Image (tube, rainbow over all chains, first blue to last red; front, side, top):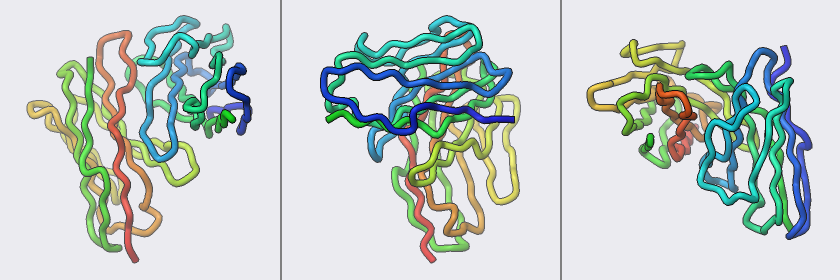
Length: 112
Length: 113
């Protein structure tokens, strides 16, 4: 069974541009979580999607947005990129509720 | 909302010794507590978890204990090995729908040969 997959692995963008990151959850998982991990720091919660709806949102500006598709895959969009958006973006999936969550390998976003 | 604290932030032990990482949570409704290990440049990996109806769980060299009254839980690693060196994150998951995992800030464990 395939794990959580994210694409692309690396992404380099210029300040002010938009970035789109993608996540495919484990088959059977309906919840997708997005986290930002700046270098050497902890996991900052961004967004939680379940059954196609946004369930919760972390303390990030509105230029961070996303969606979940009918097949439960998810997309994270970051508009008007700023230098401090450079980080590893991790996606995790679970069956929903308080169940085990598994992480993808992440997308390393670099804003120059 | 839930708040998770984690101590210590860094921990160095000699190979073969034990390591203990402690976390406290604030929301008494939390009922699921996973631990993740993140090696350098890799994704966080779930290593053990515990639910609020259990006080202790063990898997080979790692164990987790939960004290619901005091609202804290701990990760215990015995007979540490160099490959245990990583950042460890605890998390709490409130029972109420609409709540997501809340992670602690992490503990960087170094196992010295």
